[in-house]
Image (cartoon, rainbow, N blue to C red):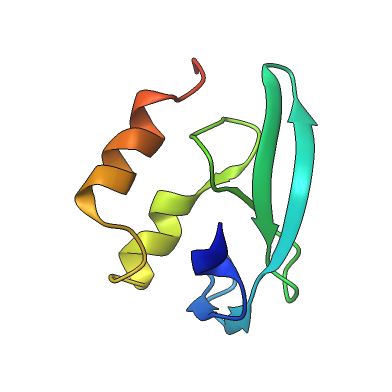
Length: 83
């Protein structure tokens, strides 16, 4: 999670470069998540694993190419909730 703190990233929802707010834990129907929130558009992105209740960190990775490495992408997808 440290990679999201104090880092300027382009939001995939509003297309603005911002420093995302880190939200420690938020609950969905399948369990708890660590999420970040865009302070501009308020969109929530799950950063621990993919979940249909939140936007995907992979969307942010497309605009911020150095955000995730291949292992982090694989780990994120391997623990996804069912859709």
